[in-house]
Length: 456
Image (cartoon, rainbow, N blue to C red; front, side, top):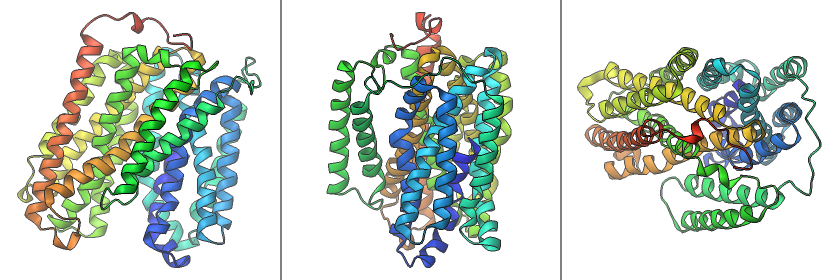
């Protein structure tokens, strides 16, 4: 979990350097990040399902080998496009690692300690996100940009050795039946998710005909995928699982919560630099507080979940996120840096509580035979939120300001844009709270006591 999140954030700091090294445009170099995220987004559900079929330990070890090998290829890449190709391969390995880590943890840890384990995974993800820019900057200064990727090799080997030595070799692991693996569903879903991700990330300054065409293709792809899955012998995503309202609401609330977290990362820098007049270094320090709070609260959040149950903690976490969002909607320049940090910390702490409890609730409610695909869908919902937060909420912010040109953004309009954006963020979390209350507390459900399986 640490490796996959570290590889997302550590490459960001290298973009200016790589622009000069490869004599490329900023738009071209951004594909170093985009290619990695697209590979994860498009394949994470499929590799989760494959792990259910052939064995999660075996596939996770393969994913670490792919990730480590791709890291070497990234460091040796002689030009930008080979580096981007190696990043795609690295993203495939990261998708396997992200999907199967959560599934393996929920399978091997005692049920009464799953919350703590999920909290620790959240901490590792936050540590990787927070550590990436700082560590990346130091490595580039001392060893060059290649060190960003070489770093993954010894860490990948160490992770491989630990898993090989300590995770049980499940005797039930078997070779996948290539006839029964849903290859058509895998291709359609990967195509659909890629179209959606591209529609939300290309041409960030405006949503043009290409974006609409990609979004239309993604919509059609969803319909085709559902039709194919209904007739599949061994469907990639058993549609019967979505009859379980606990799972469906868990996925939707995950998208909403992650959208708000991404909003703080997109809108925050404009407010800190354009209104509070902080330097780039100071903005980076303030923005790092969010991941630090998440890292510090992950394990305690897991202990709370194990003590009082995931249902209550889900609502507590969402209420905290709504409180922080509405506080940011009231912010002004006179609030200063502290007035920004306090609501940001409340949002981040709430998200840590929510994510830990939501993951625990879902992963303990499903049968062992679908934990891989469920973990994949959970991670996919997170990526959906990140993409939606960066695109839709970013669009609300710029629309409220009235310009995409940073030189034309005035402190007053930036503040007004931030206030409007976080009103919408608060509304999204209120919707999530209503769903959680109605679906988790409103009535007793048979599904809360019955595992979800591929048979529904």
